[in-house]
Length: 180
Image (cartoon, rainbow, N blue to C red; front, side, top):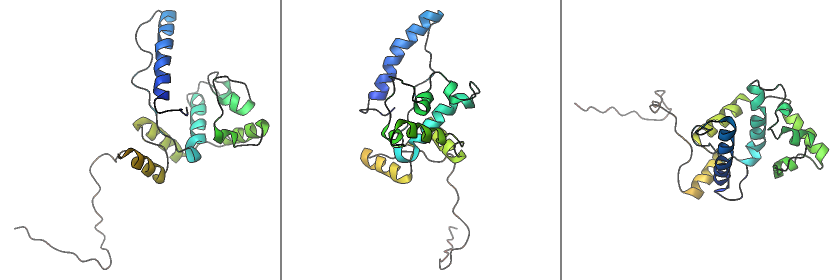
């Protein structure tokens, strides 16, 4: 989702929960929530990662062995993006539109994105950022967010800090201190 304001995604998911959960609970004669915990969201640096996110999301049913082809999953945007199937819930993102000058060219270019799997590093970064709510982007993107929010974003590595290298640095002086 690309929200129009800062609260749009939360409000949308909250409204969905208010309407959809009672509908399912009545239909299946059950009680309680459908989803465990809060939804997870992460800011995405569009130019570097947005289409990778599309690929990640649309390939999830394939990775889960629910379907063989992402176009076979009925709740996916894949058919709209690759075959031009009309879906009133979708508004094409400008980066998707920029894939081609017309619909056939754009759909062909989008299909080509799926010719190769996501790089393992990209897949790891996507999952890590989503899990931690960390912005997905390069260092410059994170610094801009930190500057605009006035807080550090991201997460530090777990565990003890790594020890300083014991390899001597040319031209550096070592000082021995005796605390006895």
